[in-house]
Length: 215
Image 1 (tube, rainbow, N blue to C red):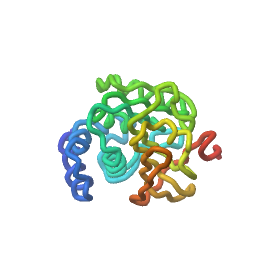
Image 2: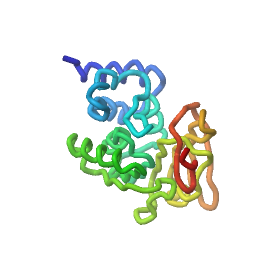
Image 3: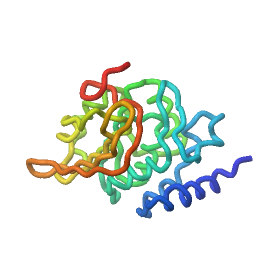
Image 4: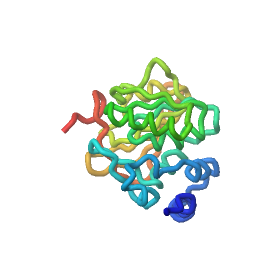
């Protein structure tokens, strides 16, 4: 029998704290969310390893550290409305649900969205709304957002997403070519944006009208 609670603690201590994740709320959320329930059962024993894992449809659940650093860069305090582009397994949305008031999440693949919805409901995360569609268009009907997170690699920063941020809102997104990206945080200001570069990374393609075309 796998001791998942101990595996989560080891993940937080050795992969997150050891690499500089300091936000106590992010660490607590990563300790709380049962990552093993967001992968297929045969991969459960690998759920807390230091790497991404396949979830089907050519997609992955991100490495725990990448989930943590992207979440930390959003600087959430608890009362925010957040948009996620790329629901995938639902794990990132689950972590965010512990840290904000409401999370809206878009997935272009219906099968993944349906599976994520079932898992989120099973785990009792109720402040999540899911949509199947082109995430690069954002979700204008619910804008503006305090924060937007993109969990796929983009060729550039989609202006459609920046436009859906409130003033002072943060967009965290991997930007680069189809093989390597740099994690960026873009903050919307009055009439302009500021941008910071953080760690290198590699994500699956952000496919859509304002991203990559499907291969």
